Image (cartoon, rainbow, N blue to C red; front, side):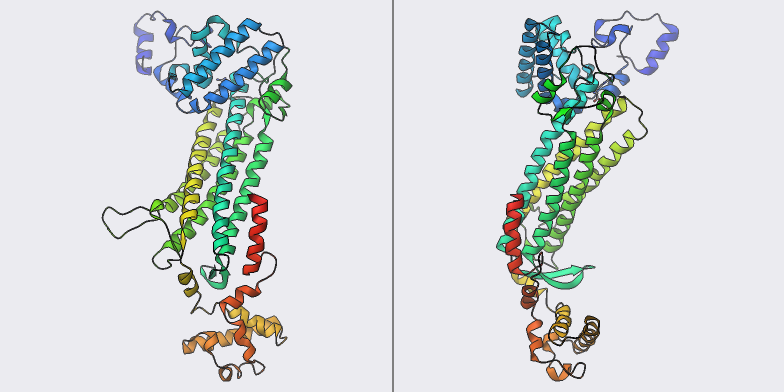
Length: 481
Ligand code: ARG
């Protein structure tokens, strides 16, 4: 093959070389005197990544062929030969025996060229009333639809693991934080259910994107439709789509489904990164709220004592590439006029990368969550020494003494300051110490200052009280599992 430099040299100095058939593309080479340069072939080829579409490409081709036969656009014997050849190719690919070739550009041409080798000229009839533009739009939707289903299964498994831990520790108490400072005690089950909600919304977004993408572009042709008497309803239904796409120009140019998927995927990645961060913090020396299993930690080659939460760190780290993928596709599409342009071939790798990494992240997170051991005593111990029940004290002043909340807040602030000066907890203050600040305080106050009492009183719907958490677990199981 020649480099561009050799090409230009030859143009000036040498007569053109005779064209060998291999140099000219068999699918579109009719008007070409010679084949592409090596660089052209390289920049043009997508087979290095779109081989992943092989099985959906064959499935769509089979349905297209059956439709052409039913509509008497191709003959029964040709259709039989095509279907036989396609199923053989499917077997070759499944067995790892198929030779993907860069010279054939993409998955569509690789399949068609092999079909021609297998069945001869009848292979050329498969592409009747079809273009690679509607073909790739169809294949990609079929592929992504299936991957979304698999991802939703992965997300459901993670929800199940979170719910199982929530059930085991519905009443374990840890400090709830705001501004990363001790705020109010909460239960661990309640904490984990917050992530179950996030994943539930992520599932909803992916389900919604899937519903909108489930229209069949096949039959849009290159951009304008086709003069053949095709049956778009047949192909759409046979491929499990809800309906054929409405507008042929839009059908081949639309990649909204890619952007919608990647946007939903980005938010999922962000949610996973937040949970990963919690796990890293909880597992750190300073916290030790949890222990991760050997299966989801790694050692250090230098420091023998180490056991690092690498899986959580990688899940956190992968967020960058997933969010980057949605930006890359949006920028690729920006200002792209109708209809298909080759720019759009750049739509696939971002999706493949996001899907692969999120599936990996979901599986690793599920394993980590399922395996983690909760250090209930360390969580409970972390609630002391930070006046974490100060809000409860203010609530006592409101509920028992009928003070306005703002006054209660002021008095509580003074009591916190008093205890802080004495380096003791709120519950360690005597009545004699408290009454100068608020004479109406009685010993009833001590019942409001334990962390157990604090969480138990938070019985509002969606609150952290263990009884509420148990009810929430039951609802979460019914909604998500
Ligand atoms: N490999 C191409 C892609 O992924 C398929 C469509 C090519 N269409 C064309 N007219 N060259 O976008």
